[in-house]
Length: 64
Image 1 (cartoon, rainbow, N blue to C red):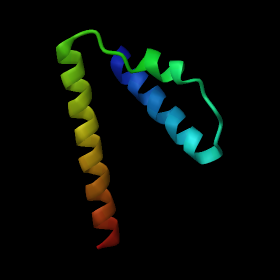
Image 2: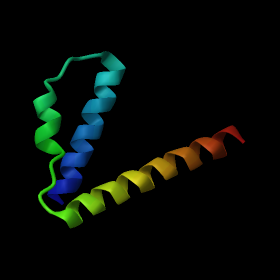
Image 3: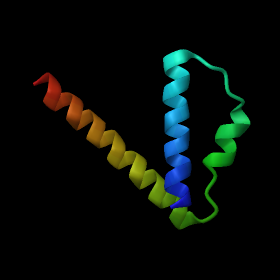
Image 4: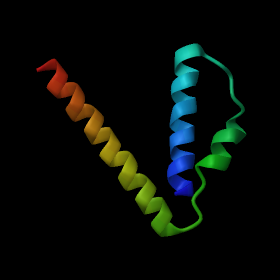
C-alpha cells in the first residue's frame, strides 16, 4: 500500500507540475520512488506498463 501511495503522490505532483509549472526539488521524487526489493521494482514497472497501455488504449478508443 505504501508503494501505491508513493506512486500516486509522484504522479499527482508530476501532473500538477506540468499543469501549473511549480518547481519542485528533485529530492522529493527520489525519496518517493525508491524501491528496496527486486520484486518491488518489478511490481512498480509492471504497474507503470499497465497504466501506459491503458492510457494509449483509452486514447485510441476516444479517437476512433
